[in-house]
Length: 133
Image (cartoon, rainbow, N blue to C red; front, side, top):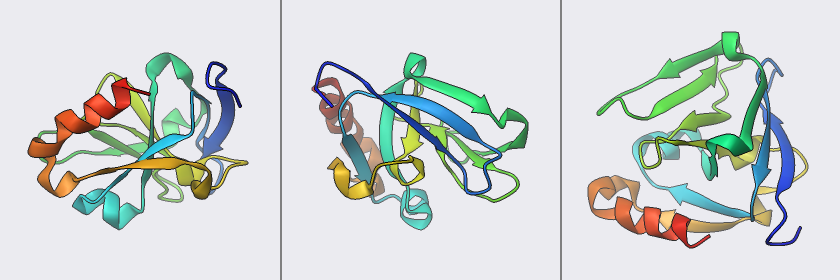
């Protein structure tokens, strides 16, 4: 993959009810230490809305929100896997779980360590890191 050409990857949940295609413009991810990301084991790859296509499973999705209710944590109602969601830090984008992408390993990505335990103090640095990619 070159830096100027997007890589098209498939992803989805464990049972296959939720399937999507995503254009990844560099193997850059985010690892967050907040309570929900730590518990889910979510590894973030934040993409533009136009680079994400839900192929099937909208009717299988359940959404969980908490706190400010800006983040929309989608998960499959059949198998429970959180393969993508709408992040609070970038509500106009889609955040796919690197662990749910086919044909790549989480080790193939470089990660920005986001201090989600101190979200308010750390979010601007995260947004800046995303703009530089």
